[in-house]
Length: 387
Image (cartoon, rainbow, N blue to C red; front, top):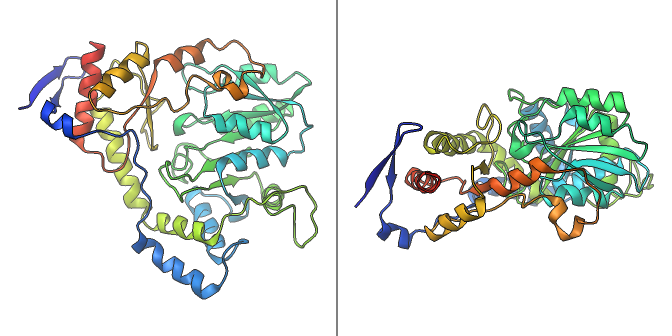
C-alpha cells in the first residue's frame, strides 16, 4: 500500500513506494545507454565496404563534420581523440609550456583533470571554487597567474553547467597563460543554440559512455582555429603532419572507424536521446525538496547525464540512508583531487568551499529510462531525511 507525503516547501505530493516493492527493486546510480546494434549496423557495413578501419577514415571525417554542425564551429577546429583525458593533455602540450611549470586547476573535479596535467609534464596547483558557479573565480585566477611559475590555467565546467568562456579568453589574453576548458560533461551545453558557445580557448568534451552523448570511449577537442587544431591532430598521430615525418613527439590517440560508427549512430538518435535526458531532468526539478541545491542553472537549456546536489548536512549519512532504502549514490568528484593519494603532494591554496561542498554533495541516480515513481521515491527519502 502507498502513502502520500506533502512537502510544504514545494507543495508537491510524493508517492512512497511500498516496502514490498523496495525489497525487489534496487535503484542504480547510473545505467549507461548507447545506440543499439540496429542503428550501428549500417555504418559497420560501410566499414566493410571501405576497408578503412582507423587513421581518420571516411566515417571519422563525417562524424567530425556533424559534430562541427552541432556545435556551430568549423569542422577544421575539431579533433577527435581516444578520451577527454588525452584531449586535455594534448591541448596543454600543444601550447609548448615549459615542463615543470604549474597549471592552476580546481581541486573539486574528477581526477582525470589532474591526471591530464601531470601527463602533459606540468604540476597541478589546486584552487578553491566559487560557491555560486562551482568553478574557478576568474579574478582570483588572474591574480595568481601573475606568478612566473604558472604555465597554464585549466577551467572545469562543473557537471556541464555553463560558464562565461569569453571571460576566460580575456583572462588568457591579459595574463599570457593559455586557458584550457575541461568541458567533459558539456556536450549539450556547447550546442549551437545552447547557453555556452566555444570561444578562443581550447575546449575538450568527453564522449564516454556515461555522458549524455557517448561512443563508448572517446573525446573531442575544439581548438581556437584550424592551425591550432592541426597541431593537436598531429600529436594524436605520432607527430605526423602532412607526411611520415614526425614534427612533434606525438602519441597514438586516434579513434577507430568503429568508434566513429557508434558516434554517427548516436547522432542519428540524438534528438530522441536528448528528449529522454530532459525528461529525467524535469522530473527531478519537479520532485526534489527545495532544501537541496542543484548545480548552477541546472537544466536551463542544457542537460547532463549526472545529478549532483548539495545538502544542508553531511552527505555520507544521507548516502547511508538511501542505500538502506535500496538507492545507490556516488560522490562523482570525491572529496577533491588534493585528497587523492596520487595528488596529495602537489601544492594548493586554501580550499574551504571545496571542503564544504565535497562534504555535502551526493550524486543521485540519473539515467535514461529511470521511472518517475523511482524519482519520486528517491526525493521522498531525501525530504524525510532532511526534515
